[in-house]
Length: 175
Image (cartoon, rainbow, N blue to C red):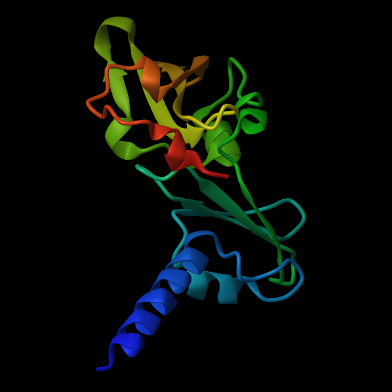
């Protein structure tokens, strides 16, 4: 195969991978939710909305910074997508919420980062995101281990943690 053909195939594959990451190639009102599923794959979660539409959830962790909620109307038409891992969505998490309520705002946390602390009877869910200063950060929801209701939340940049990665991680959050 000629080198230009190889480069073209690689660039095409990379562009297809980017489209599959967030479904950007489909515009609201321009297709069916099934077409988006063919591009993005099977969602991690799905539920029916009160208006008859559906929400499909695509977490892109653990090293990614996004969880996309993709919505359809009652007829199955794609109406929009949004990344829910941002301070606006985090601020909606309130003390006393159930785990299901949190899932419907943020989607699932990174399973490998879910931790139960027996001494505190506390379950912690964690998401990775890009903070308002364009730095990789973590958002935690702390649940009472018995009631499974939100006890509190915590957010901190990765640079404040004892992480083994020593380079400048801000470039990872390019907008």
